[in-house]
Length: 418
Picture 1 (tube, rainbow, N blue to C red):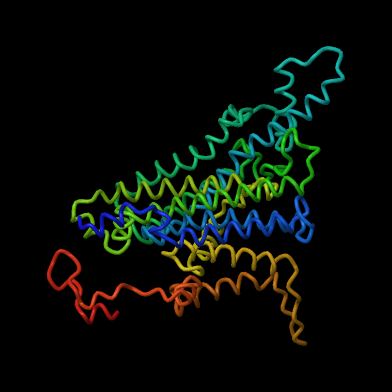
Picture 2: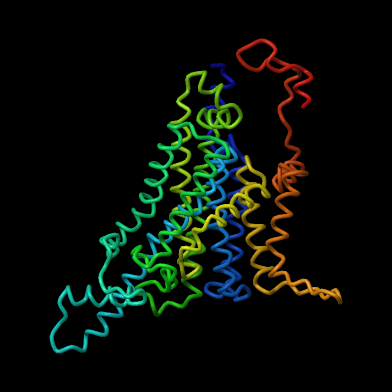
C-alpha cells in the first residue's frame, strides 16, 4: 500500500467522508431550532402536533436509509421493509399497552378489601386489552410484554430474525430481480393478513392504541413527551446515517455495489454473494424495526394497515424520488414526500375550483405521487439528490481513459466520458 493510501486509511472516518459531518451538522441545527420553537421547551411557535409530525418524519428518514442501503447500494428491491418497521412498532407497543393497563387495573383494585393476587391483576390486564376482540387471556406472544428490556430486545430480534430466515431461504435459492421483489411483497401481505385476524394475539384490525401515553408519566404534558421522542428520533437518524455511511465506505461497500451492478461476476471472483446480501438484508431490517419503535409511540397507534404492501411501495417511491444510491438522497426524499403528503392529505392545501370540477388534493395526492415517481424514473434518475450533486459540483473521477479492472482496456477514453 502506498504512503498516500495508507495515510488516507488512517484518517478519521468523518474526515474521509465530510458529507457525514455536513449531514450531522444540518440535523443538529434542525434539532436545536425545533427545540427552541417548540411548546415544550421553547417559545411555542411550533405546535405539539407538528413536533410529532417532524419526529415521525425523522423516523421515516431512518427507514428510508435502510431501504437505500438494501436497494440503492445492494440492488435488492425489497417491497417488504415496512413490515419490519411495523414489527418494531408492535414490539414496543405491547409493553406500552401492558404497562399502562397494569397501572389502571392496580388503581381500580386498590379499593378492594383484600390486596389483589398476581393472577387477578394479570386477568384484569388481559381483559382490558383483549376484551375488544372477545378474549380475556394473554396469547403466548405476550409472555414478555411486562418487561421493557425484553421488548426492546424484541424490537431488534424479531425483525432481524424474520429477515434472516426469509433472506437465507431466498438468497440460497438465488432468487433475484423482480421475483425477489414479489416474494418480499408476498411476505408482507401474508403478515398483514395474519395480523388482521382477531386470534393473531395483537387485537386484529384494532391494533395497539394509546401508545403516546407513557406509563407512569401521566403528569408529563404531551408537549414534553413529544420533544423526548423527537430528540430520540434525531439521535437514531444521526447514528443510523453514520452506520450506513460506514457500511458503504470500505471494501464491504465496494462489494455490495459490485453485486448490484454485476452479481454473476462478483460470484465468479469468489465472493460469497449470498452472505453479503443476507447481512445487508438483515441489518436494514433491524434499522427499520428501530425506526418503527420510535415512530408509533408518536403516532399513538399501530395496526395491520401500517404493514400493508402499499406502505413498502411508498417507501421505494420516497427513495427513488430522493435519489437511490445516495444516503442523503434517501433522507431528502422521505422528508420531502412525507411532509408534502401531510400537507396535501391533512386538508391544509386549498382546493382549486375550476368551475366544471373542483380539485381536492386529498383525492389527487396519490395520483401526483405516482406521476412524480414516473417522471423521476424517466427524466431524473438521480432524483432530488442529483440537484445536490449539481450544487456541490460532484463529478466522477477523471481517469482519462486509464485502465480500470483486471484486464487491459477495462476503461478507455470513450468510456470515461460516459
